Figure 1 (cartoon, rainbow, N blue to C red):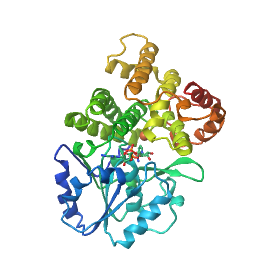
Figure 2: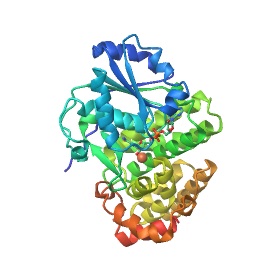
Figure 3: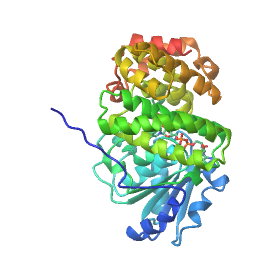
Figure 4: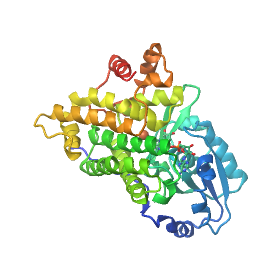
Length: 380
Ligand SMILES: NC(=O)c1ccc[n+]([C@@H]2O[C@H](COP(=O)([O-])OP(=O)(O)OC[C@H]3O[C@@H](n4cnc5c(N)ncnc54)[C@H](O)[C@@H]3O)[C@@H](O)[C@H]2O)c1
Ligand SMILES: [Fe+2]
C-alpha cells in the first residue's frame, strides 16, 4: 500500500536545436549576469562557444572544475560567484561541472560549510536559478537531485541529495558531446547503462522507472558503440543524450545499487573515472545479483535478443557475458589489477563500500562485507 514519487528537472529541452531555448530561459528567469560553470576540456575543445554565442547578457566563467571534483571546490566556486556578482548559474560540462554548479546554485545564498550538507535532505531550498547543459552522455545529473563529490579526507565519493539540486531547466543537445574524447564517451556512456540497469533491478523500481530504464538500455547498447566509433555521428550522439537523460530519470527515482556502492571507493581512493569504476564492477556485481533478480536480468537479456531460454538464470548469465564483451569493445580495462591496485588492499575497499548504505539498500541482493570482498576479488 505504498506510493512512489517521481522527480525531475522542472523543464527538459531535447533535440538538435535545443540550445535555442537558452534565450527563453534567461528571459523567463530575468537573468542579468549568470555564472557559467565549466571545465578545461569543454573550454579548450571550443564546445563552450556554442553556449557563449547565444548569450546576450554579461556573464562570468568559472572553468576550473576538475574531473571527479572535491567537496571543497564548491566553496571556491561560490566565492567566484559572489566576487563577480552573478545572479544565476548555468552549468556547461559533464557530471563534474554539473554537480559543482548544482551545489553552488543551492548554497551560494546560504551560510554553512559544504561538509554539513553531505547526506540526504540537508539543503532545504534553492534561491538561485539553475540551468544545466550536459556535454557528456552521461551521468544524468541534469535531471537528478544528487551531486556526487570527492571527500579527500576520507578518500570516498560522497552524495549530497536534496530536491534543491533539481535544475530549473535541462537543455540536452547532441551538439555538446561531439567533442568528447573517445575514452570519455565510453566511460560516461557505460555509466548511463549502469544507471538504467541498476534502476531496473532496484528494489524501489516502479512502472515509470522501468519504462525509462528499458528504453535507455536498448538505446545505449545500440548507439554507444556508434558514438564511440564515429564521434561526429549526430544521430548516435542524440540517441545517447536522450538515453542518458532517461537513465538519469530512472535512477534518480528508483536509485542505483551495489555496482555504484562498490565503485565509490575506487573513485575516492584511486581517482578512477566514475564511468570506468562502474564499468569494472558491473558484470561482477550483476553475476552476484542473479540470485536476487534473475527474472529482471532475463528480461533485459531478452530485450537485447541475447537469451531465449525459459530458465531465467541462463538468460541472466548471457547478459553478464555480453556486458563483459561490451565494455572490452569500448576499451575499458577488465580488472582492478590494471589500475595498480594491490590485492591486499581489497579488505579496506570492502570496509568503505559497506558504508554506502544509501545505495546498498536498493540492491536486489543483500550484501555482507564478506560478499563485497569476494566480488572485489573476482573483479581483480
Ligand atoms: N549527480 C549525478 O546524478 C551523477 C551521476 C553519475 C555520476 N556523477 C558524477 O559525475 C562525474 C563524472 O562526470 P562525467 O562522466 O560526465 O565526466 P566529467 O564531467 O568528469 O568529464 C570528464 C572529462 O571529459 C571532459 N569533457 C567532458 N565533456 C567534454 C566535451 N564535450 N568535449 C571535450 N571534453 C569534454 C572534461 O573536461 C573532463 O576532463 C563524477 O564525479 C561522478 O561521480 C554524478
Ligand atoms: Fe553513475
